[in-house]
Image (cartoon, rainbow, N blue to C red; front, side):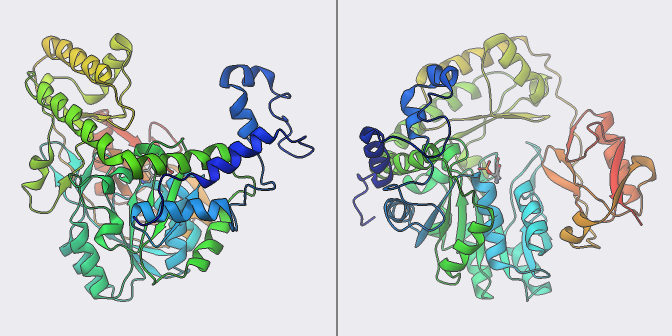
Amino acid sequence: MTLNQNRTPLFDAVKQHVTRNAIPLQIPGHKHGYGLEEYKEFVGENVLRMDLNETRGIDMLWDPVAVIAEAEKLLADSLGAKHAYFLINGTTSGMQAMIMSTCTPGDQIILPRNAHKSVFNGLILSGANPIYVQPEIDDYLGIVTGITASGVQAAIEKNPGAKAVMAINPSYYGVATELKAIVETAHGSCIPVLVDEAHGTHMCFHPYFPISAMVAGADMSAASLHKTGGSLTQSSALLVGSSKINPNYIKQVLNLTYTSSPSYILLCSLDVARKQLATRGRQMLDGILDMVQRTRAEINKLDGLFAPDKKYFERSGKFSFDETKLLVNVQKLGLTGYEVEEILAKDFNILIELADMYNILAVISLGEREEFLQAFVDALKDISAHGKRKTVKKIETIQFSPEVVMPPRDAFFSKKRSMPLEQCAGEIAGEMVMVYPPGIPLVSIGEIITAEIIDYVRMLKAERCTIQGTIDPIVDNIMVLDK
Ligand SMILES: Cc1ncc(COP(=O)(O)O)c(C=O)c1O
């Protein structure tokens, strides 16, 4: 870091604007909240006064030249990037922008099969064709770990013309892959690397965490500062680490989807969160790691519960783990993760981030309080004392090799019809069928639905697994392309 990270140019400019108390003969129409009294009463006057449209002295997101440009430079500097762009439509818009900045219609992109839905949407927007790399699975926990450098190498050998490689760092569950080796592999074939760092914004601010995308030498990454960096929901960043991608072109791509009325409340939160991470992040994360490690040790003393740590994942020699993700395997309680989630919410007023068949996940972050974690441990003690003690039946995870017969974009714009699941063999999927756990699509848009996939979906339904992605919530029907 070389710039003065104590500065908050955008936040200062907005505060100055608010203090100026100018007569607002402009939008937004609520005019400092006079037109939305009930809302103002609850959230406070300053929030409404900060809710500005692009106006004098506060720059513009779509072509920043003043305080936003400065704030973006500070963000890039703090995260070790060459360029940073504020996003106010989440990392979703960053994922889409990364794909669209590197791929044109018909280009190939190498992706983990367990990519987030924003990536599949990015394929539709860009017209790129996916080349999937199957991620590895931790059989005991029943979760996806990630793709490896050898998987990427094999995909590149079969598809040497691919325009980008995408990796996830870390996954929703906190598992990080051998990112440096993936970057070296892709760069060995002159292919840029794009990283989904939605869950890893904090990782470059403390050496205990897995390596971050920019440090690993990735070309671009998208980071949800709102998830683990302290900023407000929807505020994220797109980072550029190399000179392979023209920053002006990235700006053009972002402008395809940027709103022309960005929220300064969200933008300012990015400016302040960046200052906090850059100036106090290391110290704050020291405290958080201490808290989460003590909590994990307490949980591991409880019957029927297992909370893996970094060492557990590093045994593989390929993966690592962000320990602020407090993953707890509950299968030996005789309860599913969904049941534990419900007990925590209803009996203990504790809301966790994620539950699947075998696990629950609590996210421990910058605003954590000792008392929150103590309440969590106390609740788990109680649940552990009353669990049924019969291991939840494990379902074998089968990864199907997708047969992509139509680019996702063409499939998306094709005519579709709903068809009973039993009759779908041989049809081309018009929607994604995704199962949790482990969070890998069984079939995605533009792929052939096979008899094996139908059998597997039937079995998953019988086991009451969560199936997502289909219009029909109970997956009796699937959307297929009209022939
Ligand atoms: C792995 C992953 N990537 C991308 C995203 C999209 O991030 P955002 O919610 O900031 O748009 C998410 C959101 O949960 C995610 O889990």
